[in-house]
Amino acid sequence: MVKFAISYQVHEHGWASVALSDGRTTIERPVSCLHDSLLDLARMALSLKAGHAESMARFLDEPGELQLVVIRDGHQAKYTVRWFSEESRGGMFSAEDGDILLEGTTTPVRIVQQITQVLWKIHEQIGVKEYRNRWQADFPLREYQQLSG
Image: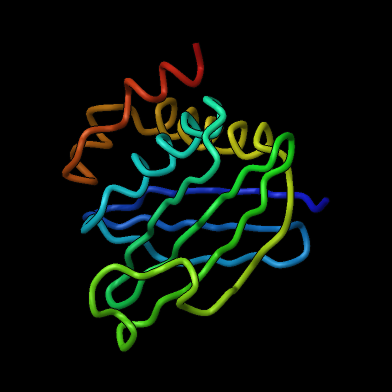
C-alpha cells in the first residue's frame, strides 16, 4: 500500500490548483471554476465515509480534465488519476478513457482524512466569504461540517 496525499489551493479569479501524490510521484494541475471540484472532493469523502464502493472527483482545466476515481474494497481503496485532453473530450468520459497518471492503493480513511484536511485549511485560511469571492461558488460548508463533526 502506498501513501496518498492531496492538496488543493484556491487562487484568485476562479482558479485553483490540485496536487495528488503517491509519495513518489506528484501530479499537479490547475483547476477552473467551470466545475465545483472542491464540492466533488467533499462529496467523495462523505461517500467513502458512508462505505460506498465508488466515487469520482473532477478537476476541469481549460482545456482538459483530471479525474480522481476511488474504488473501495473493504478496508482498502484503489485510486486512479486520469487525464483527458481536450481532443478526447466529446462529453462525459468513461473510467476507461484517458491517460493514467497515477494509481495506487491506500485506505478509505486516509483519503477521507486528506480531503477533510484540505477543507479545513481552506475554511481556516480563506474563510467562507473570501472563498465565495474568489471562486464564485459557495464553500461546501455543510459537507465540511459533516466530515469534521
